[in-house]
Length: 236
Image 1 (cartoon, rainbow, N blue to C red):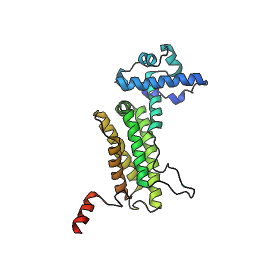
Image 2 (tube, one colour):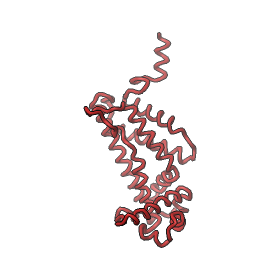
Image 3 (cartoon, one colour):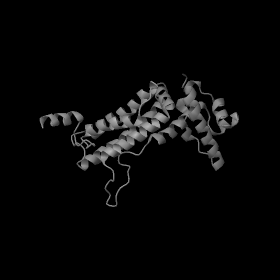
Image 4 (cartoon, rainbow, N blue to C red):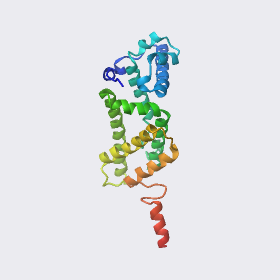
């Protein structure tokens, strides 16, 4: 796979079209690229196929993107926005500022949204990870996206600790890195092996691991598991 052109393929350096028509055409090319990259992979995708899928003249492609590499990077930036699901603290609040949703439910919703978006775009997400191992520019984009995710979770953990909800002995920085890595690596490993999984069950299991590691109350209670319930039942 030749990714030598990706390092300089920064679509943010190119201004967006000034007209609504131009923006629609650019978006149609991005939508087509999403389909072609998912079907053919990065290495086998062709500009002509992207243009044909978008019902656009081949020459018009270059009005909006300089290369296949540039539209790939632009698509990754678009996907990052979709994957940036509501974080654990990005929920509505009551008038007094208190959260309407329990922390575990916030974690569950965020993980479910992330896994849903990842599975929907699984072929492109796998390509992103693979190309990132070969190209410094794409690796930087992936690392920056990961860093933003980690920072949001770190902020949530600190908030929960301040409220007495999470274990104060847990280091927020290390925990945020470990927990986000667990979820993203789970999604990648399942997608890379082309195996399907139940989003609901996966989100529940990952969220239980997440909450229990932080000492956050789950539907079973604080620190309670099926094993501990069984033991208490036998003792009674």
